Image (cartoon, rainbow, N blue to C red; front, side):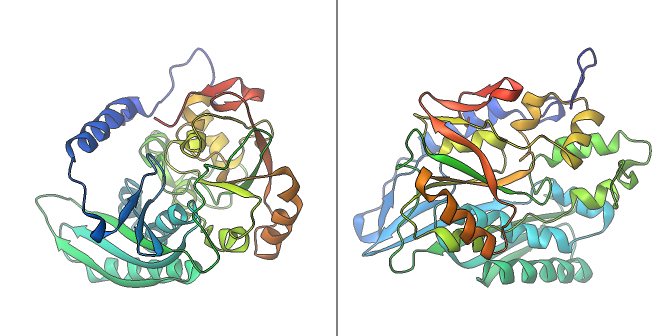
Amino acid sequence: MGRPGRRGLSYAGVGVDRAASAEGVRRLLSAVRYRAPSSSGRHVPLPGHYAGLLRIGRETVALTTDTIGTKGLLARELNRWEEVGEDVVAINVNDLAAVGARPGAIVDTISLNRPVPEVLAAIGRGIDRGIRKARCSLVGGETAIVPELVRGVDLGATALGFYPPGRRPITGQRIRPRDRLLGLPSSGVHANGLTLARRVGSSLSRGFLHRRSGATRTLGAELLTPTRCYVPAVEAIAKLSEVTGLAHISGGGVRNLSRLAPDVAFNLSRWPAPRGIFRFLGEAGNISPHEMFQTFNMGVGFVVACRPKGVGEILRRLARTGYADAMEVGSVGLGRGVHLPQLHLSYEGYG
């Protein structure tokens, strides 16, 4: 990754100020004071979690929303839209999976500067692939032509999840020291950190047509690889009592683990060494390991926390479901934050 003695890129340096963003969100939420009556459902407080939970009678539903962010700019530059159509489904259903919910439906929102039927058709094909993998329905959406607001395409979605009989939300509240951490590899950078990754690509002589050593595709094609869907993995293990927490390693990198339980330490002592696209981005952009691990998923897109006695059965179920590449990446201990001892990296929390 980054080399000392040469000024490298950072997320803040390319315009994404995490501290200012966190403060903005804090002030936004502090301004929202209204609390709905119980007849409208009971909000289950999970501050900072992947999805919001609402208890309606005896049922609990989960809601989440997200966009593809600046991955859309790369899609526009390369005129490839199917991948981000699949992305907008995966990034949302993975957040539902991170609270153990089964995706039921999704609605999309597409803002464009002008209607281009071919682009919308390609996005639709990608959405179709995404909902097939997640086994959920597209039940509606919104397409807005707003040339004064956007110059290309802004793509987002909202997803609704539910809990089948016999399943309860998995929130991380049962995580304890000595729990084990199992990682499910990612398909690439997914849909996070693209502002930084695009800056690296644009600095190369051939731009996104560059092909790194050992790669069979261009850098642009690698960066557009759709987010891996982890819904089938969670469906295979969600009823096991040994599962104590689930984490989607999205924006914020390994810091996402702190969203599950702020009062324990997540020790990632067996996290795989960065390779492929991640090693390339770190070296080409001279990005420090500290910045890389709090921006990208670094090869692991989802983490399962579980009791030690459940490791074998969970790995077997994941293998039968198509996730034979799952592996142990660490354990839970006393303390706080996220730690990668082999790289001497520590993060206090998610914010």
